[in-house]
Image 1 (cartoon, rainbow, N blue to C red):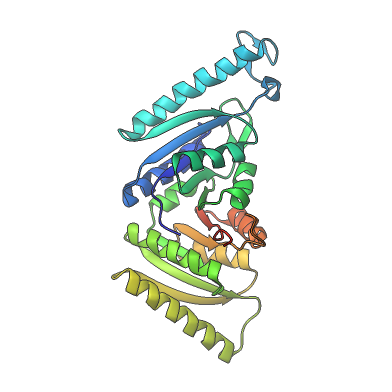
Image 2: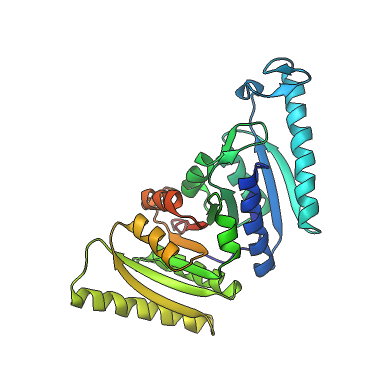
Length: 291
């Protein structure tokens, strides 16, 4: 799977959404690729009981409410686009479910990286991101970068990328993506292998040998890239999150496994738990399409 050639960032005009946007903007700069932003609002209008339109709350002409959404979202979107500068594009989209609208929009504009926040309230006062992120992990079909609350500053302040691997083909896809990101950021790559229990010496040495082999392949592909290897034991999601904190990681990369030809995720439970526990952005790499 290739590095990003166009990035789509979902925004909800919250502080969290703006944090995700700052991460997307940085990646667009280092990869020298175009950035698109999108805000999705849902109808019907009665899904937003707290919104006030024209002096009344949660009642009235549905078309008036929809017009209010589009007008307000459009103004906020233009403000973000002005900050991003020339070349950035943006869209206000309507539809449900939000994850499907974003997925289809990414395909329509040729984006092969989607960036979202993990939770936050949309401009109309409704939770927009969060469950959307968890659903996109399983259905996006392209790499998804999930930015937790407060994680943007850590990403921007660190050039260290962590990739967890179990030596499977999906993990190798994750390693290649992680190396591309670390190289673009002029940073350092940490390869982490986790055992469920403390391994014996022979098993540990074999894991270290395999990690060393993978690390050297990545150094050969990206001359000058600094790659470190680590073997730890414990519950995967907690160990990954703890390692990221201990080593000043700015970004975590996880390869995911498909169960069938469908865009389901076998390792999704681990990915979901890492996203919930991590304090830095988490990049989920989907499985290759079947066939």
